[in-house]
Image 1 (cartoon, rainbow, N blue to C red):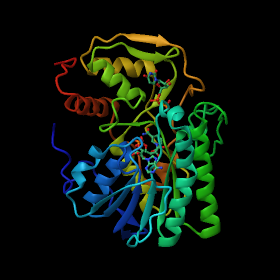
Image 2: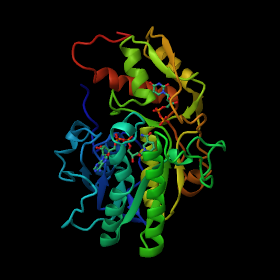
Image 3: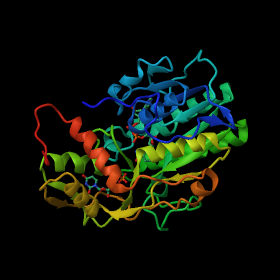
Image 4: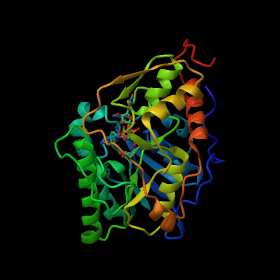
Length: 342
Ligand code: NAD
Ligand code: UDP
């Protein structure tokens, strides 16, 4: 396996980790052992910030943060973030990144997903009150549901089925946004809501169920890729390094959001599958099955707010981001498997 990132030399150009112009010293990252969270932990540690990572590993993996264990700046607490953590040294920021995020998990982890939006948000907001800390909520483009406006701007209220298969996630995040806003008004919590659009990159679980890991693992194994519906539904994919830059910029800003963070480079799912097959040097075919219920038809962020208030825009294009992700999946495949393109 290739070496994990050298944390003294960030592989992504990072803004300094600050809050209101002052360097961050100590941050709690709930969900820090997940895909996005572990990259955020890397970025903070690389900035010299002490990170307390709280994760119950419901969808995260210890190996995502194992390389951080040797850093004196990193503390891992394996626990449910809904349970209050007492006795922590002063925190400058609380980042709420803890939630199942793959549609395949919304049935298996239905109540846990709702609790990540509700109980966990509540507990972490109380922690932010106790510490006078900045609070970041990792919300989602799913709050727009099967959007009737395109591209999606932050002032669009969304089109969500409250009892559909995705509702535990969508409604959980909508509740979380409401709770964060109530705490800002009632308790003066200095908070920011970011709405993350589809993000991909190294450390996604191969069996995560989302399109990028499914297509890469399928293409590398020369299996047929399953396409839901006609494959003409669109998504706009953001590479994880770009997202992490945006999240740090949101913490450093004084902005309350909501702020869309995503890459507006929109494409159909069938084109994405074909591109991955080609990049993998694979001869996989595609197998079309019935459309997933409530599957959003078109998704693309309007990123004007992020550009204006964070001076942020994505920099990694799809060819490069997918190539780096495929390379990671290749080098982390189960031992003894020969892959496409080898
Ligand atoms: P992930 O499943 O890899 O990471 C989520 C992490 O949260 C996991 O490590 C999991 O174990 C942990 N977790 C869940 N519930 C918890 C709880 N109650 N207590 C402690 N830890 C808990 O998913 P991800 O893709 O890294 O998503 C991270 C965050 O970003 C989530 O809040 C998700 O909703 C949001 N988001 C991600 C995307 C994306 O495309 N990756 C898009 C929109 C929003
Ligand atoms: N999808 C697909 N085959 C797969 C996984 C996903 O056709 O193996 C489709 C899915 O139906 C959706 C799109 O790809 O239309 C993006 O799915 P993903 O789960 O990655 O993200 P989300 O639906 O949450 O945006």
